[in-house]
Image 1 (cartoon, one colour):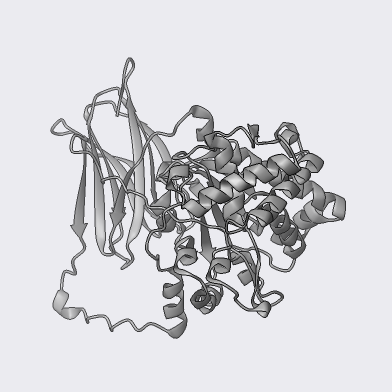
Image 2: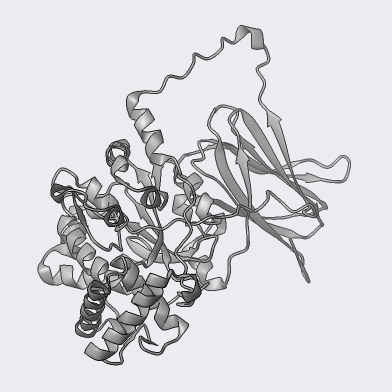
Length: 475
């Protein structure tokens, strides 16, 4: 469910300016297009750097064995794959546009007109309202942190000072009435939704906090009635939803060159459309008015094919800058998309990552090594140097598995037998990361095998491990 938006764009009124198109297009509104053509978007794009497969000093070696037909002449060549019109639209919708760099919060980087607008906003705020604070930052302190907040409101209104001031004053009043400054201390009683519906979980590759949203649980009528059964319940849910967002904002730096926005990941799998319309409108209204420029990037995963088609229809109306902020991943492709922006050890296990809720309580996660498994390939990962008595613990995952996996321990000593730690088996597409432990009785190596020879589809994968002896930890 989209979180932050500046100004909804009503196509019935026409497209007025190029700048108005930058003021967000809501993916959820496209999702409910049958009842509304109002669109809004608040996503930014940034570059990311993917780490190398492994360090040269790593004791791990990866062997790739291409699957070969024993009698190639007897195997007919596959017919050329022809794309349907719908498939072409889906691929067009998921194409990444050139990278978009987040707006700078250094005053020295602003245009002269923007610097003038910033100072004018400060003057008008002092004259009309006086000193006030937001997220424990004084808005008139004349320092970098206050500039970051004021610039968010200015950018939300295209540096129109009067409109920005009006938005800011309304936000200050709302925070006072809503008691937003103390909301983090409240127990709102939504334990069953924590880690399921909306939750902060880890960081992206650039350090932005990541918020995940998944509303598929509300397709269950009992769950829906329990949470949204009447207006009182709805208001309580909205308060909880604001609380989740405030947790993410608490992690921001509010300084030039720092992390000043979050990442939103929205899972559209099984999302009920009509049932969530009222809640969606309330959330949009709250967030677009009171949390401008708080989302760096908006990633949609498990997107139905018709959703991508609708986006393709509207994409010509979007500016290149707006489209570069939008990331769309079709159904079943979540891991590959998320790995581009978030390291595997920070991606939740339900989306093809290695991170479990309990991991977050133990400090920063152990980094994972990433690799790819091409169609028709078998990849062997060897962990050598395991001494007698050592215990190896590992996590391994392949996005959208649907392939064979096995693990075995190979002793160094001649005459010793290879031990099948995990017998070869077909891993279902929906299966989460494998976590296992093995204690070696003699020196040797562990070999993980990922067999994708029965598929033509390339898949992303990751693993990590630690080897423990009685007095030392090696990895």
